[in-house]
Amino acid sequence: MPNRIITDISDYIFVSGEPQKVDAIFLLGGSHPEQPEYAAELYRQGLTDWIVPSGGVSVKEEKWHGVRSKAEIYSGDYRSDCEFFTDVLVKNGVPQTAIIEESKSGHTRDNAFLSRKAVDEKGIMIKSGIIVCKAFHARRCLMLYQMAFPNVDMTVCPVHCYNITKENWYTTEKGTDRVLGELARCGNQFVGDLKTYLDLI
Image (cartoon, rainbow, N blue to C red; front, side, top):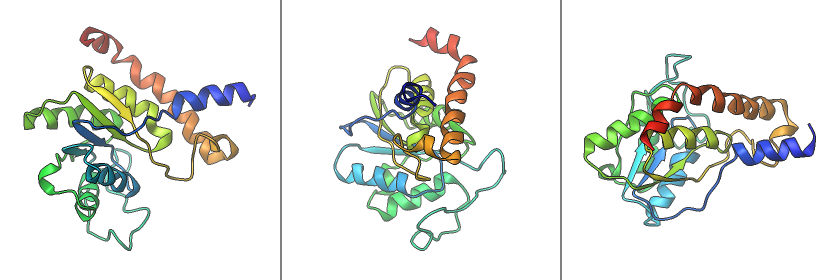
C-alpha cells in the first residue's frame, strides 16, 4: 500500500490519548490480562473511582475461550470476560467495591450499551471516561462508547496485544487482516445507529 494510505488508516484506527482523571474506566471484554492490569495501574494512580469491566462469552464460540497470556498468574475457572477481568483487577489492587461488572455482552456494541445500563442501574453520573482496549480496536470502541454515552468525554488509552501496533500492522498478514477488518466494521456497525446517535447529540 502507498505510504499515504497506510498513514491515513493508521491515524484513524489507532486512536490514543493521555490518561487523565475521569469518573470511570471502561474495559472491553477479552482474554488478555494486559487490559485490566493497565486499568488497575490507572486506578492506583488515583485517576478514577470506578472501573467497568464488560464481557460475557464470544457470540461466535458461545463459550469463554480462556486466558491467552500470563495463565500461570491468572488461573481461575473463569466463565466470562468480565469474571476474568474482575479477578485481574482485584489481584492488582482494585477493591471489589470499585468495580461495576457487566457480564452479558457478546460483542463490542453490547460492551458499550450494556455498560451504560450497568452504570445507570448503579445510579452513578459519568461525565468523563477512559476506554482501555486493544490498540487496533480503539476507533470502533470509541465510536460505540460515544454512542452509548453521548454526553461523556471519552479518552482511549489502548494496550498492545497480538503484537499489532500502529507502526507495524501492515507488515504482516495477521495485522493487515485485523486492522482492515476494523476499518470495515467501523462503517457497517455505525450505519444502523447513526440516526439515533444524531438525535441524542
